[in-house]
Image 1 (tube, one colour):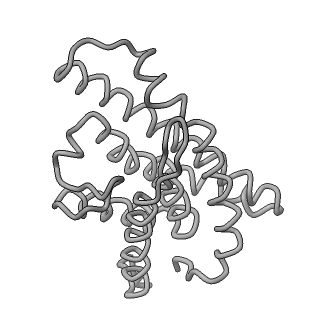
Image 2: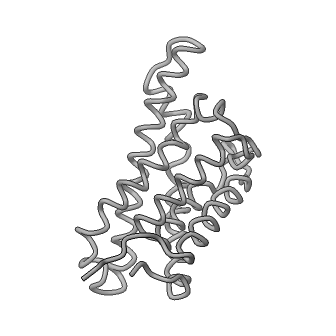
Amino acid sequence: MNKKTGLKTIDLVLIGAFAALMAICAWITIPGTVPFTLQTFGVFLTFYLLGGKRGTLAVLIYILLGAVGLPVFSGFKGGVGVLIGTTGGYIIGFLFSALVMWALNKPLLKLEGRNRIAGLAVPFGKMLMGLVVCYAFGTAWFLIVYTQTKGTVSLAACLSWCVIPFIIPDMIKMTLAILLGYRLKPFVPVVR
């Protein structure tokens, strides 16, 4: 039996559409004491609806579009300079986040299909693990780049600037991505 492993046209369209969705979400800023974007919401929704392979490819395409200079990152920014800057590690961390969520798909698939609660809780757990990876990679990147360009900074300071203010908003974005994704999932073709 010859098994096809390539992507179909619909997969390519969905990957491109969700890369664009992440860009749009990056442009939407929610004001507050520490303003934040919906960029991680776009990553979470992409992964929830497209799954591991297509979701990871959409994140990769999104990062590559920004790397070549398209203004797809927050503040309508783009270019390699953003990626090698202090916060670029969080953007690159989205890719590692997607890879972790993809790796967790297969072992948790049976759990996810048991009932509606598990169908919502398991994706939340996968996204939470992905977010931890993104935070860890982004914070390490921030610490290195900041130290090289501006001077020594403590890990506690990095966490207080780059992680702690975003934990609750990211949990809310994760929850909204799952609830919206749960409603939209029947309309997105699954991987065969």
